[in-house]
Image 1: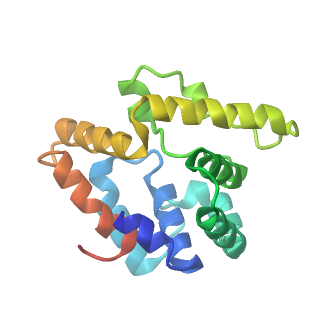
Image 2 (image 1 turned 60 degrees about the vertical axis):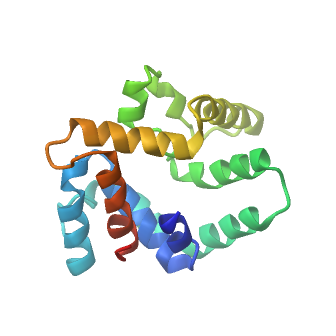
Length: 182
């Protein structure tokens, strides 16, 4: 929750979390401390862990106020949790990203990776809503976001040479994503 609270402070902390999430893609968890230390101290460096994602990062940076303001409007709404979840997914899948079923969770749960496919160029809003609904349904069947987070941390902790266990993996998240130690 500390990462969520940090991201919701303002558009800049939200962007900071967005950048860090992009820095995790296709990176070993054991390397994240070094990746984020480099970013926190020096920003972006040509050829770094963020380099191949820069078009997404720059686009999001240019539109961070839009994304932050809309996310907060959705979160403050009086809609049901299901509607809020769908609206949040709809808002962010325009970035061709689809929440946090990473390759580990897909593999560990025997899921078809296509569950994360979201064609942002598709003009059929009903089709896109079905894709979001199917994705949300899979996440719910898996126990929801919090349960997936615990499973992910435990899975990484049990296979890593750097981390003792899932609790230690979880303890790194505040430092990685918020620039603040707990």
